[in-house]
Image (tube, rainbow, N blue to C red; front, side, top):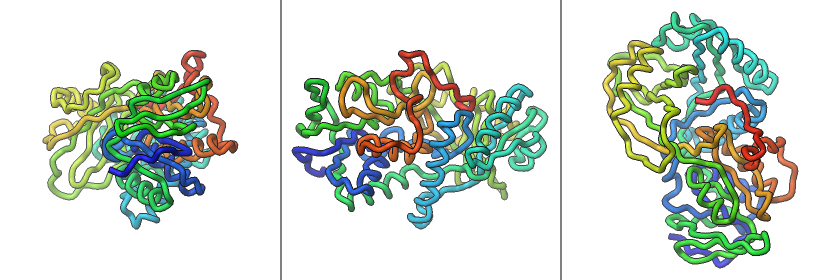
Length: 384
């Protein structure tokens, strides 16, 4: 383990894709007095077990803008890493069952196009051409954007962490934060399992564990851990086409290529919050039922295995990005509710600029943590 310094200009809590992206942004901006603290190994929390989706297809202009920034950043990282990111731009395909869903997403596509996302409406027959396993008779329409896709979050973490270290950022793994000292409304130090580090600036990027970190400083971050599971099929015999990252908006069932097989999943709104990350095969029958409702040929595919991870869920399933109103220089980028990988580069730029006293590239007022107490949630139609 790297030694813990006595003092830092900035302490970033959390070594997932968001925290490492923030550290990298500071390093690129010439700030070397940055220490990143991670309780385990880098990427060992939620970032180590995502599906790595990258999409610009949102219904809210702010989410679209954040995601578009992310798509640009990952395109650059893919080139810089020599392809190690494995950014596969197969596109996202949203399947819509009713005319009402189609009308709602048609408005979203118009907004996406205005913000330079090349999405478009499709008929069910056109969606079937892109993804032959779906049953087109079950759908009224679809949306598709060729700039979307999926990549490897762990590769992004490794690339950004390496670049940040080379520029002087201290990354201390297996170092858990146990307290934050606040005096007169200002941060004085961060307490850890390996000692204290004096600082006046703390950035919480602790994902599903963010509520605990916020509480240490007296800041309420309404983030709850929610277990999500995915399954992998065995390799399918014969030649199979690459398919888009396909999502049935109504049932939340989704799938995309994973090697010679498929990755399958869905979201269960009845899952109780908690830190349980044990994979439970009891969910497979419901997975098969949802698969049959979307693409009947997927129902009986053999499952090779799967895993469970945590979403960092907020009440409106949208991120928290900003600076605490009650504690000076406590900033946060968390609660991404499944979109942390996609929005991490944009969030990192915003946090860097807030610390530096610069105007961020987008107004993040709607993402402030206080919005729930103020009854100002964000409405996003493509949450799955």
